[in-house]
Amino acid sequence: MPDTNELLNLVPKAEARQSMKDFKSDQEVRWCPGCGDYAVLAAVQGFMPDLGLAKENIVFVSGIGCSSRFPYYMNTYGMHSIHGRAPAIATGLATSRRDLSVWVVTGDGDALSIGGNHLIHALRRNVNLKILLFNNRIYGLTKGQYSPTSEVGKITKSTPMGSLDSPFNPVSLAIGAEASFVARTVDSDRKHLTSVLRAAADHPGTALVEIYQNCNIFNDGAFEALKDREQAQEAVIRLEHGQPIRFGTPEAPKGVVRDRTTGDLEVIDVTPENEAHVLVHDAHSTSPTTAFALSRLADADTLHHTPIGVLRDVQRPVYDTLMNTQLETAVERNGKGDLAALLAGNDTWTVAG
Image 1 (spheres, helix red, strand yellow):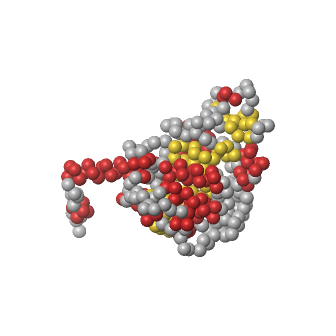
Image 2: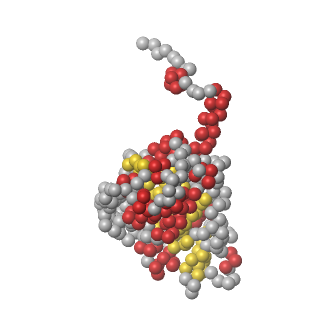
Image 3: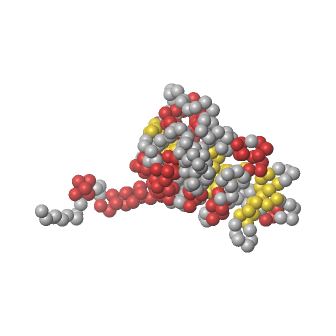
């Protein structure tokens, strides 16, 4: 299987060093003032030059929603496609044009409602594309209806007595679909967001990055517990490969351990007596079991014990490479195909009038 560098080398390099300015389009950015999308856009435009790729060979594909205006603001090729179908369109691009770096920008409604099947099949196939899933736990573009990630009891215009639906956990869903790269970050943490985006860009295959993004109009403060400095010490678990999974304050350190009876993960107060039992994060484990268990730690209402960072980063055969190998083998064996013959087919039958 090709390594990261081999796949990146398929995309032409920029002739000269680029800057953030080179990736800004001439379009006026039109999101609500204070929207978290601005921070994500700035982070993406800021780290794109580090890839060293020709911007003419970078493509952003989006579906429908506030986040899906993203391609307008990137000075690359792009497509504002149809609701939920961005992963399908991006799959076609990535598999037919291996000289492109393909990115999908989607939202929790776009990706997890009408686009749910397209998302999980892109993940299981491991197509070489990067999916940025903006999660604000609300429908913003259509003005404040509950979304597939809204918490139970959420009162919105479409659920005036509270939502009855159990919300999706996008990271859990991705791990369950055997995604080879799964991460979570927060719009307001520029340093962390950029580091996760770089890791996703380096990954061969499908990389899904869930970005907690604030909608200050229809769901303001949804992730305040993760952003407030004092609350975040108790709420946020920063994952680093090869490091013990610890968080909290120096005065009240906490850690994640595996219960020896049930096998489940739990949070403990770390002491000298039990600190040896704190799990060391292994993002490269071939088994998705622990990554999935980590994704389930967070309480959906309070967001306490929310892991951010790369939960899973494993090597799997890349769909584009496998398909290209099949095509090359077919040409070697049979020569170039006959499209007309393929369309006509060998199976014919007559239907009596």
